[in-house]
Image (spheres, rainbow, N blue to C red):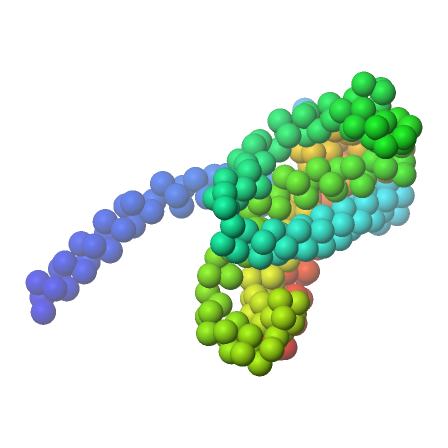
Length: 293
């Protein structure tokens, strides 16, 4: 018993030593920045002066700031668009590429390829695709259908939709893989029994596939929404919040307030509010799902 106890203690010490770098990394790059952001959100700080305590002034300013409110609504609009279309496209692609098709592995890799592409690089490529000139790739292709050239990223009507489309293209492969894993866990016997009862493909999809994939959909919905609320790189690389702040998100506003206007106190308050918003959403949705189950 004593020998076993010594072995267990030795294993525990080894585990702690191996995990120590991760804890140090997490403490330095997560815990400390979060605490500093919370502290700076109550101060007036430009990055060069000594932080001056102002209490709740930054939060009061944000609540009455039309630009922050517009950024919030833009962020919600972006999140709704990307999450809904991402889930629908990922599910349909997963179901399609789960069939016994020739070249299935090739098409899976093609769909997943944008996921491993850096977001900023993808944003610059799509900025070229959305080039407003007639020679821009999208405008050039649409010209064959008789559609005149559009200012995709310079028109208030199209700018956010263009970024949503690019973001769905970028992330759909990741969610498709998760759905594929979920599909592998559905017993084939259920489909076979349904076929014996005369069920067609649509019936099996609606009454077997979708209900049994609900936990997977919940996971994708929560993670995709959290990522959408933090959208920054595609905004930075394609529109920088324009035109007329129509694509301004909370994450980009935090960047602009901190590194362009040097209002680190205000930016920190925005970051804290964004974190609270995401946290409340996650807890609310998880509790709702748990109650339903």
